[in-house]
Length: 378
Image (cartoon, rainbow, N blue to C red; front, side, top):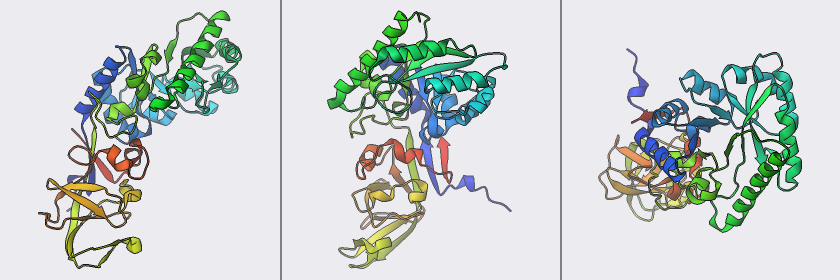
């Protein structure tokens, strides 16, 4: 007799698709009804690309963005029919697949555009592309920090390539989530607008989709919304500023849970876990739970004030987080083997509270959820 291990997951993530749909509607409303491109790269920030993509399509998603072509193809084959923009680099040799699956490729620079144009020769239809402008992030894109005319000239030359079809132009903000750097965000926006003005002077008058706003810009920079916005972090209920404050209409989607594997009494002076970094200050009871950094519970939170909820009781983490286990102080609490443990999410620590202990950003732990963490969709 075989056992279905999915019936009794060791660790699991409960994903509330209703909350995600509500977050999408909030982004749509905050964007003034503009189109919303849903960013579901990195397996939808660890939440599961296909279930999330289908749920958002039901909610009215206008478009999607992925980091890689393989992510976009997965969505297409699962039944996603809306436009999908590949934000990252795709080798020109795979241009035929981009066209075959009806994908939109980001153009990172003029040389890359020429490579794609050559690769698309003979395919019978042009490859749809969005031009990426580097307005200050200094990452991918046509350099447009200054000399806006030069950037516009590059766009216009790309527009003449017979095997590419420009349908959009965009940029990405570096510090839209940092209030005291609003001047830099405004500078990036002005660079973007300056390139558009120069393109018009050069005779580029065709109407194409313009998009710049990430989640932070949707929430905090109304002047940056243009024709479409790109919602990522906010869809999943993350605070784009990584602050421990609620945002109206945005609620966490994922709750990370595990079980108690053992409850044991230890005497005063006992040393707990690798490195012996925690010494019991008195006789105490600890719970060993079945999750560790191989499940994406961060090792960096060891002994720093992280807590979990077991049977509705707040229990402090102690000792170093191991690969597959971690320990909590349950002295005087009603805790037993097999009890459910909320490590973070609804009813427990927020990701902002957890990651500010390390520190890192709230998006990282869910992106690192491993395959042995079962996703359960509500």
